Length: 88
Image (cartoon, rainbow, N blue to C red; front, side, top):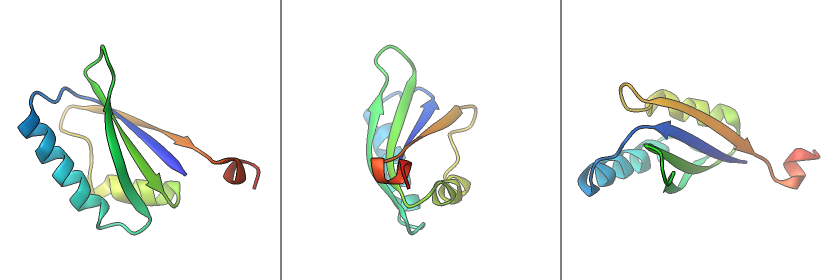
């Protein structure tokens, strides 16, 4: 399954982005069954979206425990299923 984790938060510069990405890579490597694929930015919002491949929603929630959103940020997620997962 794919998870799109939305985070309402402004990343102010490249250094902050690189530090965030290093933290995300480190924490995803600590939970088997979750893989960080990429980060995307919403064009006109102070929001970014993490693109994650996950074995299950439980694995995502396990990872979120060790990698919560930045202080004061609002976050939510969407689950995208393949046709096989959807019709299983």
